[in-house]
Amino acid sequence: MAPLASTAAIPISTRTPMTPSCRMTPFDQHLAQWSLIPDGAPIHTHSSDLLPVRYRDTPAMLKIPREPEERYGAAMMRWWDGDGAARVLAWDEDALLIERASGPRSLAHMARNGRDDDATRILCATAARLHAPRAAPPPSHLLGLRPWFAELEPYANSHGGPLALAWSTACELLAEPREIVPLHGDLHHENVLDAGARGWVAIDPKRLIGERGFDFACLFTDPDEETALAPGRLLRRVDLVAEAARLERRRLLQWIVAFTGLSAAWYLMDEESPDKEFAAIELAHAELLRG
Image 1 (tube, rainbow, N blue to C red):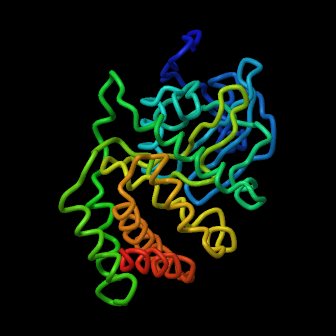
Image 2 (cartoon, helix red, strand yellow):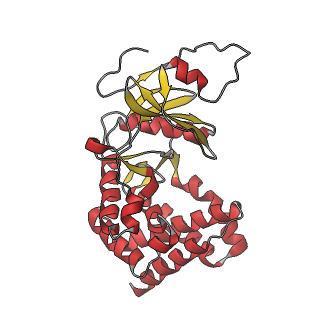
């Protein structure tokens, strides 16, 4: 691997051979290929294998995606080039090496401990950096929001109620989109991390493009039900986000209804309870009715 430039990562296509007798982990090939030193216990999620490592004496995270969507997200990380997102240190078609944002602060902890306003403003500031225009064109494979919402329709038809409301609201929003930008797609408290002197950086994007307001909707049910649905909390966040992100308040409430319905459909797919999502939809819809 050639030395890294100061602002861009270098793609790597070479492979380090492994003998058949070795018992390989998902990380072995890239540990050798990129001269990485393990620096913590592995983390396994439903979509990726991750390992804290050191790269040229720098804390980093090695990510081995197991789903195509995760690979598309890596292209977004490269496009952002460290501006609002974690820096990409190296990549190939099978893995991503990013800076490890290991600062002590946590947006989820802030939200749970009397600093929810601060956490909400940080999420808005991070979104502003990610949504800012860039000289380079965005990745070509980005998915529009209409197909992203397609999974909601059958649940709206079969369950009615809040899901039908969410689907009709989504259709209204998607019929006349505004301010189209590449989106993070999953911008919540656990996906914006403290990178020390570099500030707050986003990780784990999707591959979406669409109306800017969509990117704020998922923060309204995080980091957990007790925090997000505390009395007055959702509407306080609506006021903060509308002001900080310069969004029309009514349209933001509509995005909350639409996206939270999609999230509820995903919970139903996984045979989990969507009660938190239904409660958020009810609160946002009631505020819409109040005008």
